[in-house]
Length: 307
Image 1 (cartoon, rainbow, N blue to C red):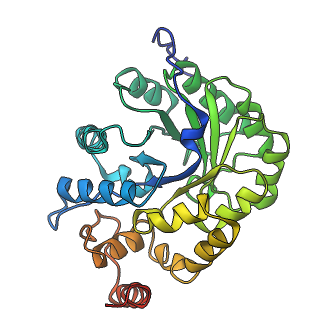
Image 2 (cartoon, rainbow, N blue to C red; image 1 turned 30 degrees about the vertical axis):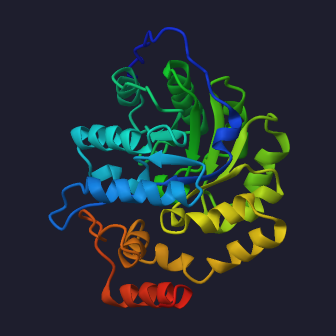
């Protein structure tokens, strides 16, 4: 017996945004921790200043890279509040709000103050492995009840369930669904979306190395992990001349695999530590980089930033 979704009455939807604010680089912010695994808010402020000064176009708060799965509900509210405070309106903020229990997501929407948030990024349901019709029903319920725009997120490597191009295109017709972060790694699927999507629907790369390829088929930019450490590089990738953009994307070829060798955000937190931005502490079950990985990342960082 299915549980009926409870409709939420949120009043008129304040769709006061510009598509251009989600073009270019969105950075999937890490959540810095102290050695005792408490949240390092001073490190978070330093990180936000670093990425904004480096030229990112918007912040993505409390996504997978932010280790949201190991934050309490109270901590999530604290992190979101701190990010909005530290950002101080400098760039748009996208809030990670999703899950595999549709009603719980709707409850979270109803209890969230969206002041200062430009859109939500909502991951496709994980673990349950719903049908494509189930995915459409899930996102439709979210979009119908969310007072700000919704960006879809397809990441089958984590959810074990792929959103097909047909599903994305069906959802793209919803007036409150404005884009897709595509992290399937399937360029053909991305091309199918690009070929038939509405003109203003944003196709966003969820894979740093695919950013240029996505632009070539009509993509809008990237929501990046590595931009935590290298925002200026991604500014060049997304906004530089063709020559500058290619040079920038080629410059991350060597270091990018190490960002994921022991899971995300292990690699990028280690790089941020070497840069002096925050510690590389993670919460279990994620671990700090091994000695071997630490040495590889340190060598590549020093190689590109000689003293």
